[in-house]
Each structure stands twice: as C-alpha cells, then as structure tokens.
Length: 303
Image (cartoon, rainbow, N blue to C red; front, side, top):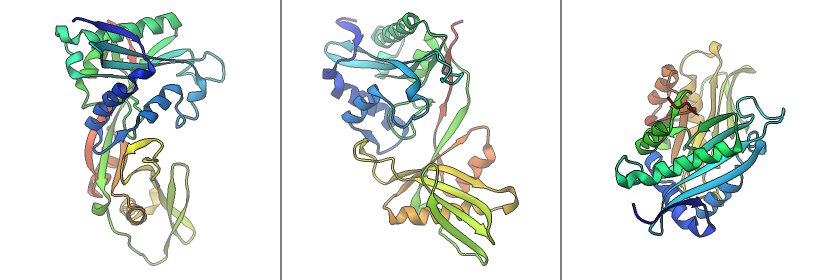
C-alpha cells in the first residue's frame, strides 16, 4: 500500500473523521448523523459519562491516512490509578472506539491500514503501561456502544489484534411510536408524570401502591450534539413490581407513547440483555423489533 501513514489526529482531519464515524453509526441505527462538533467534543471529554469521564487521565486519537484520505481512526483513553477510580477502570487503557473502511480492515494488502493502526494503538497502551487493555465501540451517538454486529470488519481487526469478548450481549430494539400501545384507563389506577433518573418518568399507582414505572429520554437529538436524529427517544428504565401482575409494561408504555406523540417523537429505542429473553419478548409484543445486537466487554488476551 503506497503513501500509508499512521499518525495522531489533526484538526484538519475533522470532516473526514466525521464522515467515517457517520458511516458506522448509520449501519447501527437509521436516520442518525452526528455533527463535526459532536465528534470533536467527544475527543476532549464525554459529558454523558459523568462518573467515569473524570477518571480519565489521558486521551489520544490516531488515524491511518492513505493518499490524503483518512481510512481508519481510533480513540484511546487512559484511566488513573488512584483509589477514587472504580476497580474495573483503575489503571486501565481502552480503545474507546475504532472505525475503519471495510476495505481497510480485510486481510488483503488493502487491509494493511486498520492492522497498522491497531498496532499503533497497542503500542500507545504499552507506553502508558496500563494494567489491562479494553476495547469498545462507543461512538458519540445514541445506541452505539459495545461492538455492534453490523461491524464485522471491526470485529475482525479486534480478533486479529488479540481482543476477546469477555462481557455480555445486549439487544437493541426500536419501535415506531405509532405502533406502541394506546393509553388506557383502569378503575382505581392513576398515572403520575415526574422527572426520573433517566428522563421523564410515568408511574402507575393503585391506591397509593406503586405498580411500576417507565422513563423515556427525549434529549437524544439535542442540536448541539447531533445534526440529524429526528424524533428519537429511548427507554431509560422500565420496571414493574412483581405483585402488579401481567400487562403493566404495555400500559406504562402506552402512557409514555402518548407523551412522545405530543413531543413529535416517532421512534423509541430500548435495550435489554440478550440473556433476558422474557424482557425482550415483552418489548416485541408491545411493538418493538430487534434492530441489532451489540457485544460489550472486550479485553486484550492474545493467544
């Protein structure tokens, strides 16, 4: 491969990097594009990660350039070793995300770029002398985390570099709000709307007894974060007490959906552990369909 260079990210790369990031986002979730400002801000800090981001001591972004074109890029984080850092992250280094054009990730000569970039990532982690090396696919976009199944070319790079999947798998689901249940009234049952931990909360009460609640976050498409993510929200929490009985997930979703229709939201995301098939089935019965699966937790364990 001629004129191939692996080097630190330059600000002049910003438009090409954004295009490369958006190609990967589009393969996971339809209709979402992140802005250049979002990408650049994500290289400096992760405001949504208010617990773990303060533990980061160093960041690095590397790119592979061929004939003036950025064909692969990666963002690395180094976590501090102090007692305030959680055990999992203490003195850890992570490939926070890795993106590459598919032709730059194959085993052919044209795939040299991604492997050279990954070698540079591992060399940087070695210089940092971290205790453990992790990998992720957490791009600055809603619902893009872990290593999504639509990125087999990135999985191949991770496999060749010695990263192994050590965590769980989550199912990403999506529903058109129009397909969700309609709100219903029941004698003796009231619904209260409040601010929850992960968005607007709808709680069902029966004679002051909590039956369950659902929280929806409609702030996924804030203009300073995303160029285009129209009408998108996600479920932050969905909980029904064991004594409430069957069907309350659908009733809670019905009241949440009515609120989302008023706000102009037309799609709702949900996330469940793949191992919890019952929870996935409840969402499917309510109008959700599987969008993809993502494998969380990758650790460098070369054979």
